[in-house]
Image 1 (cartoon, rainbow over the protein chains, first blue to last red):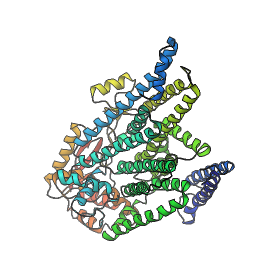
Image 2 (image 1 turned 60 degrees about the horizontal axis):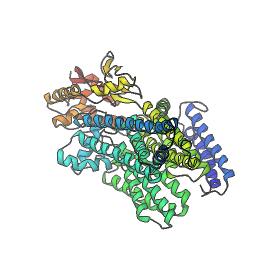
Image 3 (image 1 turned 180 degrees about the vertical axis):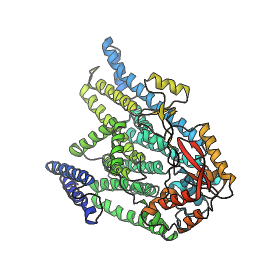
Image 4 (image 1 turned 60 degrees about the vertical axis):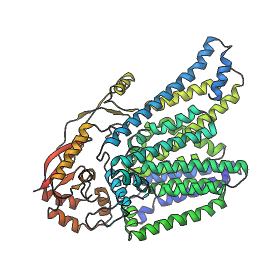
Length: 64
Length: 550
């Protein structure tokens, strides 16, 4: 696996995590209207994962 | 002696005094760091020894793990129907208890059996960490410091010698990851496939998962690493691994009529307490700052500048999984895997720094190598200071704490739930983790208090309805229900309390022992209506309410 592929995997993981943080709402769980404090943390973490993924893309075909 | 010290020795003969001093300084600092961590190991051994001698629950839940072991020793499953007397079931996988069974066969159902197994598990983990660092670094002092740093962690110290399965899981996880790293390195070096060793890794991962469910993060970390290095082969191994794991799961569930799934999965879906998770993350970082920062920096370096090691992936996965420490019923021990991974990464990072310094220095008597060695010694000493914990009821340890400028006692109010609050008392135990009821070795007064409660149970004719299993064990009575498991099931609408409430309402138990009132509300209500407190006994910093029928 290359660093670029790893970066793409990170981006995909971050996007899934961001979507997943809203899954609770879809199932009617959670005590907050809008984005709750735990969701905010999860979204922040997902954003960091995406950014790490993007930063790996320029490393190209170097082995991961 | 390690290479860098030998090199420093050779240069020492013809150098001026200031240079000699500069060469001696890192040796002194690393010697002090070794002394500090060996000291922590002695403290850990003292705590473990005193726990082995204590015949009651030190941590709530230990007795129920002893009960699981006892049931396995009798050829029975501990995954049972909670709706019928004795309303007991386990919520943990079986391996730790099964491993402890021979000791129970030989010596009977004693608390020291599982405490010893768990303690030995932590020693194996430390040895595996030391081996991982030694395999790459070949510096005995660095490998020793990395291994001992794990045992010196406040969290490992607190729970390592308890009759709890968590640290035994960490042992399997650590050994699995270390064997995986060695296997892939050997394969890449020789070009030969070592399927036998990979099979061993899979068995160790399976053992970790069937010791405690939390091992899934380590399983994921190992397969992610495997996939990054050899995608096709990783998938080929993942399929049978998942199949075997699933088949064992289905077999146990079939053998227990569905009680396995109910008690180990459904009953473990607990509410997430965000503040608890944040508080534990803060505490973990404060206590393990040097190990954590070094591990994070090294993992980041590997991510961008070289190939990712299994240790870096393991550390990140374990760290992410530590979020589950915020679940009700979870706690600090959920960070133990991240601590183990950070110890390995710290040792490897320091080794790499030393190699880099060695190359930079050439024949210079004092240079980068001296600076790096000095920094490593200092950093380990800072880490040792951050983790400070010491029982001070032993004069020598009290003197050491005082000499280090640490407090020699703390004042903590006993934990009450079913009785009036009490004034703070002097506790001869100091811990950087803050106020902690774990870590203080139990004393003779605690044992006497436990015996007093057991005699209270013995004065009745029946088993006690007790939050701790130890008192019924001590007098040879049935172990009746597991309060936290009962509460989990109740919160998930998975238990029928009819028979239990009928027995309580009929005052079928001659005694009730409360410690933290973990029972579901209807059970506490029935106890309140049918029983009254007749005595209060304090043990291990908790006030137990001893109740008789009204």
